[in-house]
Amino acid sequence: MLEARSRGVAELRRLLIRKGEPETEVDAAIARLKSAGILDDANFARQLTRSKAIGAGLSRRRIGQELAKRGVSRDLSDEAIEAVFDEEGINEGESIDRVARKKLRMLTKVDDATRRRRLSAFLARRGYDNDDIAKVLQTLLAKSEADG
Image 1 (cartoon, helix red, strand yellow):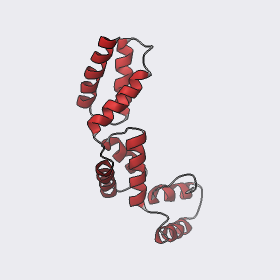
Image 2 (tube, one colour):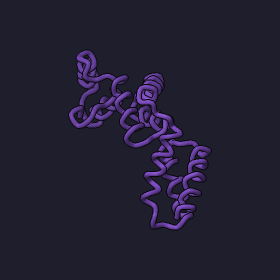
Image 3 (cartoon, helix red, strand yellow):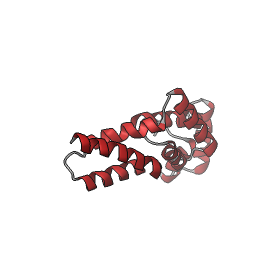
């Protein structure tokens, strides 16, 4: 399971137990993996945060939800998100703009109302606030309509 991608402690434990492995053996294996440095929630949280923030353009809030879903503690999640956003110089305002522009290029063949609805829903799924979504929609769609 760790070969496919890295995982958090809670996520790996849940998957192994779901496969029918005895809890005592799972706990022992996880303890060995942690002591060997193979399983590290803090490192996992940073890797996932970097991937989701840069690659998928997710917001801080949405990344926090992803980490929580995978069993990473709130403290580790917050630390990882803060560290990665600082290290990579990620600005959520620029990020939402970049992600929205990319999505908008894929919505050229639909009418304005559909474009607005789909772009709004897309950004909401990435965890951006409604106020930020409204601002970017106003800016990008006004520019798109002026150009088009």
